[in-house]
Length: 318
Image (cartoon, rainbow, N blue to C red; front, side, top):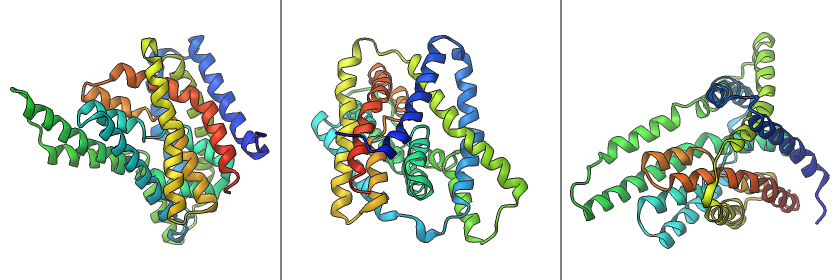
């Protein structure tokens, strides 16, 4: 299968930047203690600038809610299937989230921007604005129910206030440096105002820095993530995330009548490697921590191949 030149042109910079970050991590040019600071730079400064500016000229009518709905329906089905196969417990819930939660910001934004331009970015940012709210809140509900179920079957379990936990999850998902600038930019766009040049130009420069720095950060993280004896399980689960997830989303989207660019963007978004936030859930609920850590690395490395394949196939739908 020959790779579409536009697909190759979008993927090559992504691969090279991740490889550069991996080299920097292996050589210890970036010390482990500096990774947190680099992450803060990306999420607290560069990402908000990019997201606000990208949405500051978007009309609400341009948003593709049908495509986004198809993404969440497909993700929900795969989540439910994982739970059905593994049983109703906290480990199954964390692995179900790992099968459906994409790295849509650090990898998705630069990749979609390169491959599909401004129109593709609008579709992706519509998804990103709801991604954490829908998936992480739903996962929190399921996990709290699973914990309550496990506690009910054992004596001495600590009771959790589900209402408080879910409300905290919703608050943390909304009051976050990713959805806030998207919503703020969209609201600004509806006023009809135009950003003055002295504001727009710095935002543009910061936004342009996001893609390279974020992808280098992915490589640095990859270099420092242990895989150990979990590589077989991580590989199997990564195939589910990187290949089965986009297939399920594609089928649902096609059934709902989603076509063209929105369909291609949703399929590629579903094929992205697992997002690192899943690890936070495995830590919080004390389950599958080593496996999830290995999955972050394996899913990202495997994604260099699987995303290429998915994008080549999606090109026929665009």
